[in-house]
Each structure stands twice: as structure tokens, then as C-alpha cells.
Length: 363
Length: 275
Image (tube, rainbow over the protein chains, first blue to last red):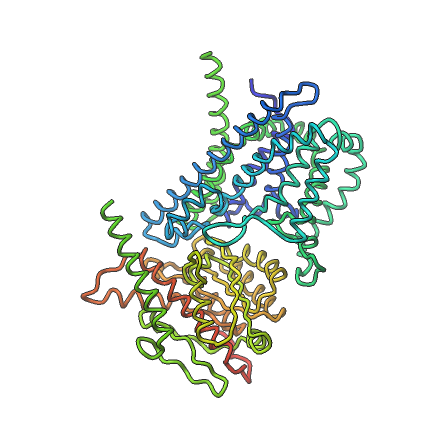
């Protein structure tokens, strides 16, 4: 039996729907996602909850699993995500190529950093396999692969030197911001859209906060105080976004990455605002469950099957972009894309659970 | 498969031919290329644009901040942003600098050109503008080379939204003493009658004129190439090849716009209003 609807799966489902919409630039419903009122967006939520879910894989202190088994479990999960990335990148490239060919528009081959694959296929394919060449909007899973590859190390530190985990993670985070350094792309020179050296911090924080001891226990003990402190942060950040009060990045002191708003580097402004947002909105799940009882199971089923839903959602977003190009964006077209897209995400999640049920029935 | 291989060979041949022609044209000004323009005592020999790249006109819009950087440091930092940088700085190859850098360093003796590549194909103007401010703060470029418009047109971004994003960003760059060169939309025969595509193109043209910043007329140049290649007796070009062929030409156009801008005199009067 799949687990009951819960807050983590609900917010994960919420992040997946937001990502699907935000990845269709220009769509009407884009203006309804929370990034219009928040410095951080669904990417932070997705990676934070991926870290939180790592807690499920690692298991609790009361029921520890052997270190060797743990490493194998986490390794196989990273391999699964890697395979998913390769598959969806290939399908995305085929979608772009087919559209360019059928619509007789080679400009489509330039979308989403795909041009290198068609102009320099030998090197670009090596880059795709090495994850050093990433398509635009298909760049979060490579980060997830790297984080899951690091997950055994995170789990081992958590098990044997728990107080060191968050300080080590934050040291790497601040080093990457102050030096600064990031992961390069190849063969097209550039940088990873999601710098893994900084984004690991939110993953590790998600993992640490999911635990019943250490940082997680401390936060649970003081959650009311933390929410009171967080609320003005969330409101002030919303005002910054709505009224465009963001400071001029050239006027900021050095090292600038500590003070500006940069998604690629997950700058402190974004990280702090996200943690405040998470603290405040974690209180709302019971209210949403009471007010909109149908919404919790709906988003939770997406969250429970997040990898499949994310993969299908990425491809649906690209398809949505192509449809908007073909039929010109209008409210009616956008509504069809939104409704059909969300319906297909639900169908993906339902099919995944149906298959699991069938497998169990066969056994 | 055979057709695809044939097409691939044709593309490769055409691309190679353009590369060779481009380099030859810059190395031997006056042979196959348009002649360089004399611009007073300070003028350098301007990089030429190969005949095959068309004859799109370039206004001699000054790049005052870059001219100052050239005088003071003999170094130019160019930040390429917007769509894929390869299509304006020239194809990126392992172990060799981009064609744009080669042309500029060959043309202006002692000049050290650094190209900071932050291009990302498919990026929309609003997203690029947000990223651009951060890149400017981190890299302190002299010139921003911004490819903009094509993706917004294809993504059906409303014209007013596009105009606001690009206009605001161009003004911001000027306020921060950074020169900007706008690289306009691609040409494609089937988009000639696309009203939204043409509206975005007109909008970009009006921003460049209003803000008095250089605009590389890629559309016009590619249209000329396309027309030339459809002349009787020549093979009908594939639309796919046309886009690739434009890459080396664009690097030449950009090099020429930069060189012209470095030596152009600042206007004595304000530019006429755009109608």
C-alpha cells in the first residue's frame, strides 16, 4: 500500500507542478506560481525535499541498516536518477529535432542549449553522458545525481560524526561563494546552472532537518519561535520581489555572491528566505488538508512518485513550449496545456502505483 | 540515412568554406571583402566582412567605454550573453580562441581580447537580463554582446514585455558605463510573414535606435545570404545550412561593429527620435 498523504509528499507534489508550469516561459499560469512572491522558487523546494527524502532511504537511528547496504542502496538510487536524466535528455533532443524538421524551423534546434548536440554531436554526446552538457530546464537532475553520489558520504558522516555534517556542508558552501568556484560545462564552455558545491547545502539541510536528533530535533523543539522570526523575513522578501527592491549587484560589497540574489549559486539571500518560507508554510498543511481535502491526496500522489512525475513533467513542459509556438500563446491554449499537463502528471503517478500493486498481486 | 549524410556533408563543406573565407577576408582586406573605411588619423584597418556574408549596413555607433578601456589597458573584456554564444563569437573549438577574438586581436595590434562566455541558447530576454546584472557585477565587462529577440519571438512573449525587459537592461548597462551591442533576430523565409516575429524585430530595432546602441543586423545579412544562394545555377540551400553558415559571418559582423565603435566619433547631437 502506498503511504498516506503527508506534508512532505504534498509539498513535493506542489514543487513538481510549479516546476512544470515555470518551465513553460510565457504561459499564463506562470504568474500564479510562488516565485512571483518569493526570492526562492520551486527548485529550492525540490532539492530541500530531496534531501529530506534521503532521510527515508538512510533509515532511522532506531532501525539502522548496515553501512555497506546503505551505500549500495544510495548508489543504486543515483544510478536510477542518472538513467532518467539520459533518457529524458534523449527524448527532449528528439522532440526538438522532430519539431524543427516538421515545422521547417531550424531555430528550434537552438532551444535550450541543444545547438551543440546538432552542430558538434561527437563531443556534445560525450558531454551529455558525463553530465557536463545539460539542456536548459533539464539541468536539475544532474545536480540530483551528484548529490545522490555524495549521499553515502553524507549518511556516513551523519552516522559517525553527526555534529560535523552541517558545518562541513556550510564550509563548502561559503568557500564556493567566496572564492568563487563551480562545476564547468563541456564541450560548450560555461558553468552548471545549479552549482553543486552551493546547492549541496540545501540538500544537507533538508536531510539534517528530517532527522529526529541534532538539528532536526532542535528545530522541532523551537518551531513556534522560528516561525515567529521567519514570518517578517517571508513578508519582507515578498515585498522585495513585488516592488523590485532588489539591490544593484554592482553596488554590493565583495565578495558579491554573499549578498546578491543568484539562483545558480543559491546565494545566502535565497537560502535564508527559503528556510523562513519552509518554516512558515510547514504550519499550513493541516489547514490546507481541512480546507481542500481533495488537494492533499492529489499532490501527494505526485510527490510519492516524484522521479517519474518530474521526468514526464520536463518533457511535457517542452511539449507545451512547442505547442505555444505552433498555436501562438493565448489564454485558451495555455489553459489546455495546463489542464492536460497536470492530468498527465497525475496519470503518470497513478500508473506507477498501479504497476506496483500489480507486481505485488502477481507475487 | 543517405540523405542525412549528404546533408551533413553539405553543411560541413559550407561551414568550412565560410570559415576559410572569413579568415581570408580578414587577413587580406580588399580582396574578396568590402573595403575598410578610413576614419581619421586614429583609425585602424577595420576588419572586413566576407562578401559571402552579405552587405548588411552597420552604423558607426561609438563604444565610448570600450574605447577608453582600449586606450588605458589595451584590453577588452567582452561578455557574451543571450542565446548560444557560438553563433556570434564563432564556433567554439577545443584549443583555439573564438573567431571574434582572433579577428579583433589580428586587427588591433597589441589588443588583448577576453571573451566571457555566458551564452545559453533558448534563453528569453527577461531571464537573460536578470542574469546579466549578476554577470556584470562579477566580471566587470567593457562590452556586453547580447543576442536577443529570436527566442522571445518564438515563445510568443508579448512585444511590450520584451521591449520593457530589453530597454530597461540597455539603459541599466549605459548607466553603469558598459557598452552594449545587440545582436538581432535570425532570418528564416517562413518567418517573413509571421507578424509576432516581425513585431519583435521592429521593437529591437527601435530600442537600438532610441538608446543609440549598435545592433548587428543579422536578419538582413542572413536574408542577403539566402537570396544569393537561391540564384540560378546554385544549389537550393537547406534552411538548416543557412543558420549554420551565419555563425562565422556574425563573428565578422560583430568584430567590425566593435572596431568601428572603438574609433567612431561620439555624436555631437542627440539621435533623431524613432517613429
